[in-house]
Amino acid sequence: MRKKVLEMLRGADGDFISGEEIGAKLDISRTAVWKHVKKLKEKGYEIISRENRGYSLQQLPDLLLPENILPELNTKIIAADNLRMIYFDCTESTNKVAKKIAVEGAAEGTVIVAEEQTGGKGRLERDFFSPKRRGILFSLLLRPNCLPKDAPKFTLLAAVALVKAMEKFNFRAGIKWPNDIIFDGRKVVGILTEMSAEIGRVNYIVVGIGINANIRRNEFPADIQNIAASLYEMNGNKKISRIKFFRAVLEEFDKLYCEVISDGFKKIFELWRKYNVTLNREVKVISAESGEIFFGKAIDIDEEGALIVEVDGERKKVYAGDVSIRTAN
Image (cartoon, rainbow, N blue to C red; front, top):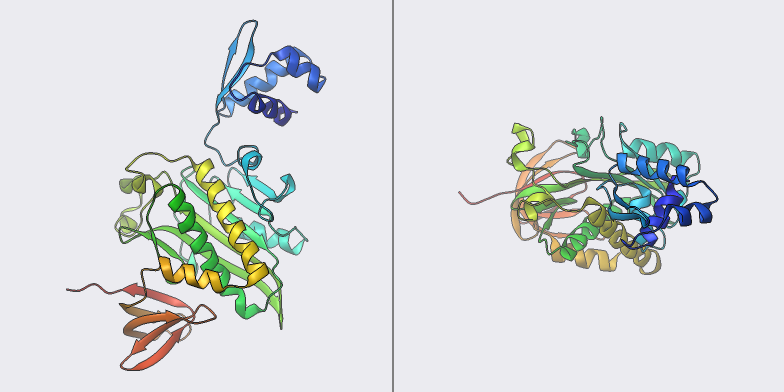
């Protein structure tokens, strides 16, 4: 019922709506309306009341609640209905939740979002710094009709979607292979893609995304202050609306995902090459498969998303591992 009260307040577009009118439409008493409004205020909704005029919703709290995201969300698959967004104030890992509900049959496009993670992981099992209500931490459940070898391409898709969302806010960022979003040489976003598959068939893919949103540089742990950045910095050291940015990312991902379903990954590769900061650069590679360390020039990605590195005239493919860009001394 509280959600319905909120919907009516939102529908008034900042104008006043009386408790009597809300109560009549929802078949509840004016006292019940007042109690729901009181609870909404406690959750951070800025609502003012005037005698003989009623209530007016002035501002939403910057919480990634479904009722804040979904009403203005324009997507076809991602969070396409109210049953496809699951919200946590705190959870261990949105990817863990996504994998659990995937096995239970959750629908494609389901989004799991949290204000805080206690066990969030990035690539290579690294901890992901995620202070409460300061980042944008979520996972997307996909069920594409594709082969297991195509799974890494969805990581590239996510990276492109994030950079395109940033462009809507006039932010300029680049992609470091395969999926780090870079600003001023530092990482703003981490992406972790996991899948369940059988021979010749993907059961599901989970794309986990962690965005450093409203975090000041000196608030990062000392060991990552020189390698981590945030939307706050990109916005001229001003807070950004997490609600608006999260919605933009979901819409961009949805648009690209729909194109992949109909036309394949050709456009994703073109966009990834456009936004990348790795190609035509000297790099250091630590292979996740063999542990081998080598140096060379990144020259392209192949049709599976592997990085092609030229080493002493020989071309090597890197499917997984750490790639760092070497700077001139």
